[in-house]
Amino acid sequence: IDIRPIKKMGRNAVASNEVFIDDLIVPVEHRVGEEGQGFRYILDGLNAERTLIAAECIGDGYWFLDRVTNYVKDRQVFGRPIGQNQGVQFPIAETFIELEAANLMRWKACELFDKHEPMGAQANMAKYLAAKASWEAANACIQFHGGFGFACEYDVERKFRETRLYQVAPISTNLIYSYVAEHLLGLPRSF
Image (tube, rainbow, N blue to C red):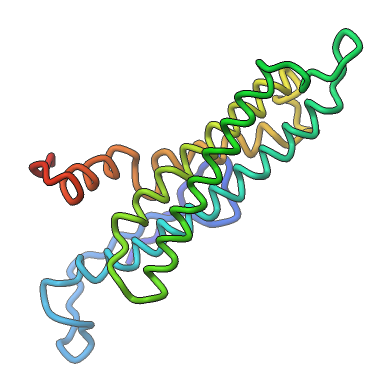
């Protein structure tokens, strides 16, 4: 077994590694489930992981929303808070709406998981909606902090980099589109 750490920016609370295993023989008595069905077994765990990632994205989104809402209430330009402007309010309100919708889909996926019912569609959609909502909340937060959004003291720049990860991992947006197209819309497999 060869384990190689992956250097990365952000999200260092969890170590990332590449694992290489060559010529591993698993005795039949140590096998889990039926031969050839391993990938199917893993998928159930991946659906739960997508729901967990959705919850993390939603938490990040609310963090950004809290930061930006407080900032635009306090930041004064021309004698009034910038949060008084519709051009500032509307993107923040849209972010809140998207986070709430993502949260509902996340709870639906959790409900199905708790009932031991199929949840692939809901897990994928929850991850998609939550990652998108978190990213939009991050963009609004950076936008309305202006240059201060890149200052380390506000901690926005770090979270901004970290939330971008969820557009591509642990499953990319394109793979979610493929899943929805094939499994929910009945379109031919695209890969």
